[in-house]
Structure formats: structure tokens, C-alpha cells
Image: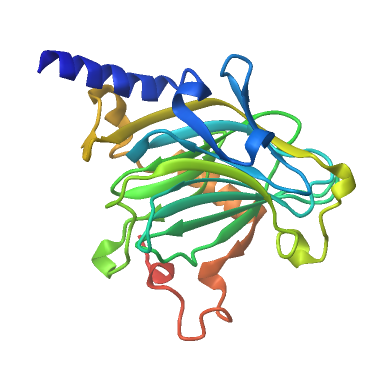
Length: 277
């Protein structure tokens, strides 16, 4: 029993450290367009005119704080999408999404976010970035606990989705989720509503990843286990200064919010849009 406990603790600590992409992830599609390089310290995903590529985590997480540093496709990235998300499987899956929509050179990327609970999404919010995400790595985080989901970039919150189950609104908490990322062509809709198409003369397009970190509970053998040192995020929520930064992002960089799209919801906005707290 003691040996098994030690092994489990070592397993969870390895999750927290994120020492090597070889240990934590596998390339799932795209053949050699996805690569783990630099002794496991970097991962690259590439899109060309034949295929994109993608990876997934070896472990399933059930609540946690997930961080990844990403450098997005530089130059004319119009038509490309780099997706980075947590997801379970099945018709009633849960999902927490970032999608980075490319643009023509010099125009800002769009960060598309969404939350699925029990198979239902349609909770999109979109933002422009206040920096160039292609010139250097930036940290994209998901904090997911039983009370809330917080999207943050370089520790600046851009979105919060609170648990409002008391209002009859599903919240992702039942299913464990793996971490996924992919790069693919979506020029039918991704850039300026599909008006700007992918310029394949600029291919291949690549996004690069490093410094994965997961302070998380892990689903292992049908049981979720949390190392005591990782649970400081389990009750975390936005404090006053974080709320101020969130409001700064919303005021200056939000370009779409499903909660004010009355044309899309003629029968009434989703119930969480009217919540006051």
C-alpha cells in the first residue's frame, strides 16, 4: 500500500512539474507535422496545404490550473486557427476553449473563447490582443475549479464563467478532461468572416509550445486524486485587482460577447447573461 501511495505521489508531482513534452503529451495526427524537439522542451504544430496537426495530454485532469506558453503563427496567418483547449469525450462532453484566429500581417489576432457543459456550448466571447502573440511566448492559462472557470493571459484574466447551477445552468464539473491543441485551416470563417483566405504560398504555418505546467487533480484508474500541494487553486476566485484587470480587457479588447447578441437569441439571452453578483 505504501509503495502504491509513493508511486501515486510521484505521478502527481510529475504532472505539476511538466518537465518534458515527451512525458506529458503525444502527437495524435498530422504525421511529422507535429514534433517534440529540444530534448522534450519544445513542441511544434504545423499546417500545410495537405494537413494540419495536433496533440493531446497523456493524462486526464479533473479541476486544476493549466498553463502553457505558446508562440503563434507569425506573418500572414489569415485563415489559420490554433486551438488550445480542455475537453472530455462523448455527446455530453465538457470543453473549455481558446481558439486563436489568424489575420493578415499587421492586423491583430482574434482570441475566441467558449465553454461547453454537458454537450452545450454557444457561449462565445472574442478579444483582440494587446501585444504581438507571434514575436515571443506568452502564457495562456485555464483555472478550473468547482466554483468558476477563469481564462487568463500572462496572469491577466480575460474571461470568467461562474458556476450557476443554482439557476439551472450546467457547469463543467462531472467529466475529467484532457488538454488538446491543434492547428488547422478554417479560411471559410476564421478571418474577417471568411473574406480573407489562406495564402498557401506562406505555408508551412507553425505554432510553438513550451513550459507546460499543470497544478491539477488527475483522473487515474477511474479515481480522481489531488496532491495536497496543488489544491490552493481549488477555491480561488478573482480578487479586486483581478476584477479591475478583467474589466480593462473587456472594455478595451472585447469584440464579441454572446450575452449581448439579441439577434442570435431571439427567444431571450441565456440565463447566465442576466445574473448579477
